Length: 46
Image: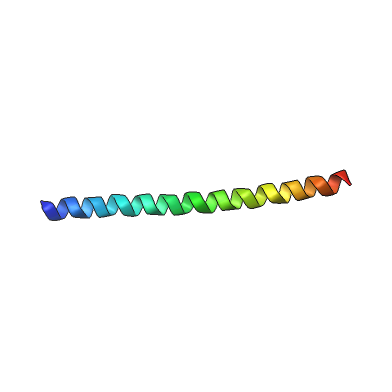
């Protein structure tokens, strides 16, 4: 029973870490897209 609880906690923590990594990767990509859009906007203004 204790082993099942420990494995369950490890699975939950692993899932949380994976979700955090995906979220961070998406945020980094979003930031890059926003910077590209800003650069294109500034270039269009000139």
